[in-house]
Length: 120
Image (cartoon, rainbow, N blue to C red; front, side, top):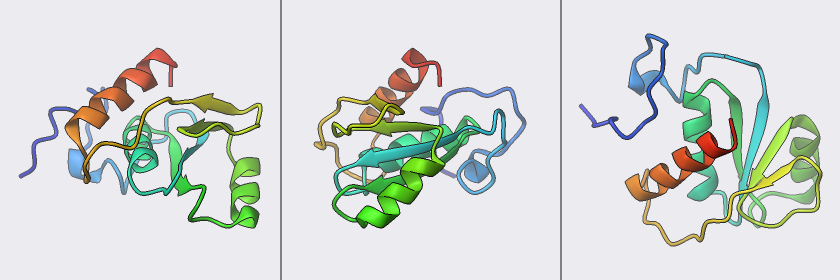
């Protein structure tokens, strides 16, 4: 069994393994997580936000079409981006793409800190 001790604690009785595929909806907010490629930072953000009960989708600016980006920007209540984007919904998560994949514990700690500081 994997070690999930690095994840934030939750009051809900849910297996850690189900956190990504069966999120508990707490507030119904839709959050778009954006990074350059959509493979690392945005995926980590979406993982933690789904675990906390948000409807979160990771995308990459270079790997998704403009049409897809426009659709998802309209869909989202909040956009968390590691890249500067001109949109009033954006919260900037200033972190470099220097963490090895998958589910890097150091990056997850930064993501958890960011989520807590921004009251997400």
